[in-house]
Length: 370
Image (cartoon, rainbow, N blue to C red; front, side):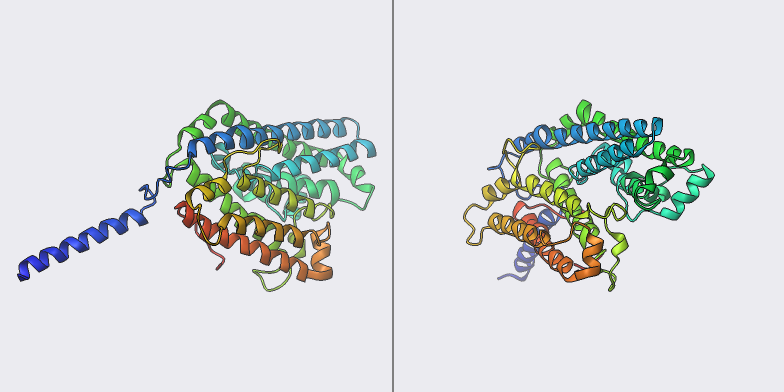
């Protein structure tokens, strides 16, 4: 072959291969449209049957928390205190159902950081209460508010029945009022934004790219599962990343009996989102399970089956844990570590196998070496 022709052919092949590689690596290019699956129908189901109802329920629960707080401040006694703590639990549980939805106004506000950063900074809270001077809008004060701060105020000020008597003092009720009202304000802003505008934008953005709604929410879902359910609720307090246990880092550590309940609420929310169950569990629709089965229907090792099995294994291990994760860590941390291991197996299926099957690129940085 003429050397000039050979060089021209080689350059053409290099250019062609570079172009193909660039298209695959560039998340803005729709390398796999997965046209057999209706992404818009899935977004509509997510919006109408999962996200919207979850947000509405969360707002309703937080508004009831406001009422319970007002009743306690107006007439503090053991009965109004118990009503307040019961509503704190219900509101906190409803938070687990929306925490992974860090999109739209929730992302803009940094809703998760201002709602559920734990462990809360108890010393700083006490200093704020004594001085009456604080700015809860500051990101540096995110660990002094939200449900973990309420956990401290409701269950950590005294011993047993004396909690309500201490909390009824004006300097404490002032802070109680501020953090509950802030929870309600954020919930109202996010829900109003979702229901009046963003839900339509969310559904309309049905393409297949890094900025499309499907890609963004699935990334948020996997990120939440990895960093907040796996690491935050189990791995960090169990000492996976520190080499020693950190029992004081469990969720709701002052209440002592709810960390397992909140873990299961979060896990069940993740499972429902994956399998395509509505918020009230009365309907099934297009979800990640159906998406995977559509784009990879003839796999010899069905990914969907492996994922559902992994959820079952997590539930089996977690069912053996104490209601109080701090007590579990102190008495038998191995069970926490075994639960973590099962969560880690599912994370690999999500982060590697599922994302590859759906041709979705991870859009966040993994900093803990897994």
